[in-house]
Structures are given as structure tokens and as C-alpha cells.
Length: 147
Image 1 (tube, one colour):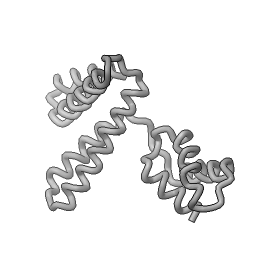
Image 2 (cartoon, helix red, strand yellow):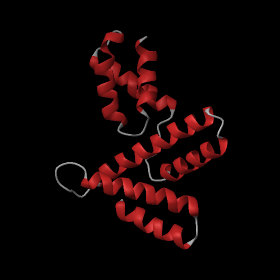
Image 3 (cartoon, rainbow, N blue to C red):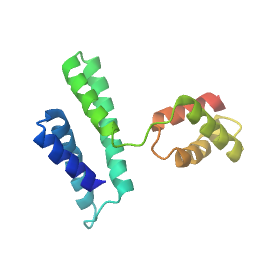
Image 4 (cartoon, one colour):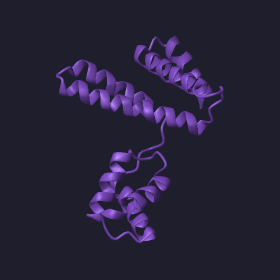
């Protein structure tokens, strides 16, 4: 995965694609920082790199929302565009129907009966979702089905 990002960065630089170049540099920098974080340096697996990509994409969504609320539409559009570049490297997001089915299965398998069981349902559902849906979406669906 990291090699793919590097190769795509080179391609973007050659094509003089400023947005893609800046975004890929940013994510590769975040990957490098993650590799040296902690007590000893390590090589990130593809799953770890996917985690960094998800985290960076979430930062872009949150920043775009903050800029939009502050009336800075140009900066918000830039953040959204960077998020779109990152989304190309992430697995496809689950649609609402699939997410609802996964949460329903989690409710059934945990025997949940109300909001007091939300933690158990979230644990079961999050394991199945595995990065294909934002945690906020999962939590909202769990609340909807338990409430």
C-alpha cells in the first residue's frame, strides 16, 4: 500500500497535479510519523496504512465542516477535495441498508434489549464493519435500532 502511494505521488508530480501531490505527501508524512511513533520504529502493514488513511480522511471531513461553518468555503472545498483523493485508497463505504443489516445481526447475536447494551452491540458491529463505515454512522444506527 505504501509503495502504491509513493508511485502515485511520483505520477502526480510528473502530471503537475498540485492537489493530489500535496495530499499524497501529507498522507505519506503521516505514515512515516506513525512508523516512528512509540518505543521503536516499525514497518506498517497495509491494514495499518489503511488506518492512517481513514484517520486523515476523517480529519479532512471535520476540517471541511469547520471551515464551512466559519464561512470559508474555499478552504472547505479544498479539504473536501483532499478527502476525495484519500477516499480512492479506502475500501468502499457501506450503504445504509447494509449497515442496518449488520447492526441488526449484532443486536440479535448479543441479545441486546435496550440502550444499556449499546457497548456490546457497538463492539460486535464495529468488528464486522472494519473501516467500511464511520463510527458515528454505526453509533447512530445502533441508537436507532435500540431506541
